[in-house]
Length: 231
Image 1 (cartoon, helix red, strand yellow):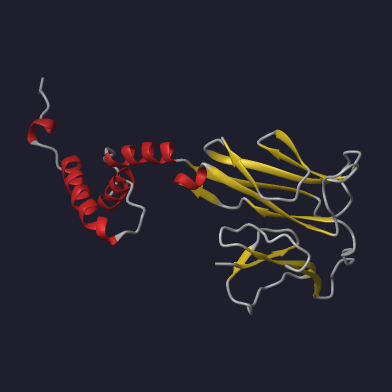
Image 2 (cartoon, helix red, strand yellow):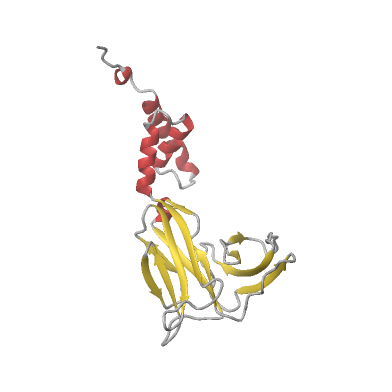
């Protein structure tokens, strides 16, 4: 369900599902942003759904940030997306004290794997056609002249990973027929090929029976499959 995204110094967010929680802060000046997030991690974009503050920890805290200035905070994507989740990936960010779009307004430049896109609406975006493996996103808050607006968070670069279904199936097949794979790894690979990811107990029994059969055929082939001619 809905939860809170907590971002410290524009680092990767942590998700919190209770109104009260603890979070360890590092020494120095910490800019803390918390906003409401929907169940699928899209930020709730309105002026009443967030709070931003800063906390100085230790004696060597740097000069405080200007919380009245314009700020861009990165939210998604994050981590690794597997299977069907890798086909369409959420791009989301949070704006503080600024807006984008309109005549002569600010823009967000999103550079995805080297390809530039100029965003003039503060809405969630879906990225499709991404490459398998590592992908990169750069977000920049620009003024009307295309310059990055000064601020500690208005340029950010992140990497995330995709494990697409085709690649997962290829890895599963390789694992099944690999002599180095363990019995558990082979069984997991068979379950991947059968697509057993719905957590439906009514299908688990039949999927398991089929998986067991495939596993035994691959792991213990008939005698004629293992006989080799001797010179």
